[in-house]
Length: 223
Image (tube, rainbow, N blue to C red):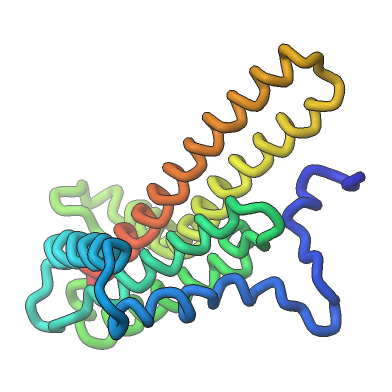
């Protein structure tokens, strides 16, 4: 019997030698063999997805100076995607539903963009704080608003991913807890509803990994 709904996200392994976050590194074992083993449909599909994401990120980044800069974003996309998918399987720790991991992904990226932009494109970064054509009387207020909106970007990225991953898991947990009190007929409808919500969760896992990486590319394109 769980203490509350959110206890389903708590670590469940030995506290001295925690193995919860090992699920986040399983992609290191799964993905690399595809590049040296005999080609298969799985490897061809994955290469097609990565090629498509590379082309899309290349257009969004709008930078021809740093060749191959989209590789970090395709790697980020695949890392979040696999972690989101792993969290949908039973008895696997959902690392992407924790702020500690999501902030670890978003904060260094945003901080590196800011450091690079302010040191190399200072004039552009200052001009970005003032929208074009804004009235002079509103300039101090607009600079303050743009500064605050810029500072909350890493937190917004982390909270968006965390909230979306937690919401689906909590909904499935609520539906599952109501099962013992239902009749056989209603239990069949409950199973059908849970299967539909599980399919929706797979779609959310893909969409959120895409949104996270696309926003990271857009933030990098501004500097």
